[in-house]
Length: 425
Image (cartoon, rainbow, N blue to C red; front, side):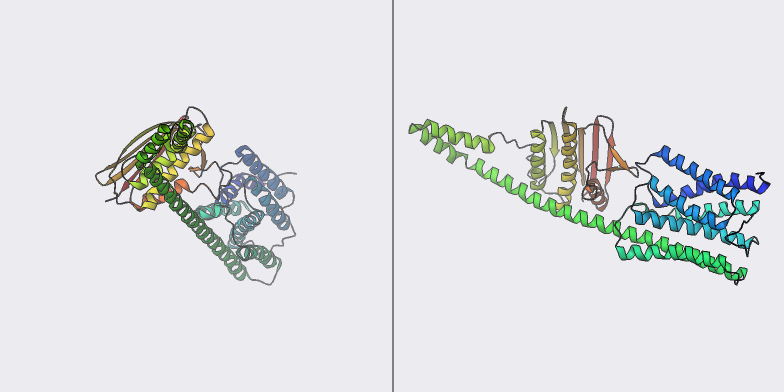
């Protein structure tokens, strides 16, 4: 088969066209944690297959069906539900085909049959790809549709029906001989506009769901820390009560010894030591919230075998909501505990808390195994259930913003560090 000039132009411009399709897929799917080599090979395969089909057939109907199948296949490079694959395939194809048809009408290609060979000219190929690239740049501002949000079935039905119906409508418009070029142009442009609106609505639904889910997580976590704070305060009060009553305990032990009941005295003493004899109060600032959280969490780290260094100098009262300080300090220390459970050896932590010039500064450095999961350049949880976990640092960041503060996170292959500064006055 001898190739004419326009065929060579198609083969060259289709390289850029394949890149445009890749850019469309990046609107719908995040590229983290995928096989990049397989992704590249799949798009090269798409180029080879679709180019060969065009050169051999040049039949619009065959190209339509082939593109739909190949777009769906390309979506399997990324993690997503089948519903989202169908939606992305339909929307990408509708947008690209609408651009193609509009350019064809404007350049004089009207009245062609979708089941017969159609030879397009070089200008058409170049123009379509340039316009499509402009469209993908505009649509790339929609960031929320990348996630795999659990959209309610009725929303999915409404969102998917429109692109699928649009494909059918385009086929009917192209098959009919009864439309003038202006009517055909108006119809295709309307279809394109409707699908832009669908994309916009899907992006907004995804954003609303994201904000709703995060708010629910944060509310649940604040409730958890409120309960945990109550438990820690009760534990601290109970410990202090026992220690304040030590004189009575010593008198009881002395009475047992004087009565010759040495065994009972030893048992009594052992029970006291088991209760609070090995208990260390790491923090004694007088700030009940900070002391409770530090003592509670650092004891847990001590049980894991960690070396603990603590430098705390704050007043007993600070103008920070107790739930906020509980969430910030609790989240950061919980992350250290999780890191220790994974590292299991050479464990150490340094905690420094200062209040100066209306600023509360929390600095935490700890050893860890050097493994950091990242999602969209942000640190992600390593726990299996990412929907229930992973909100920790995000919650801290939100609280920091409320106090016009800053959070700085750093790490190398051995040390993880976090510095939080809150403006409290």
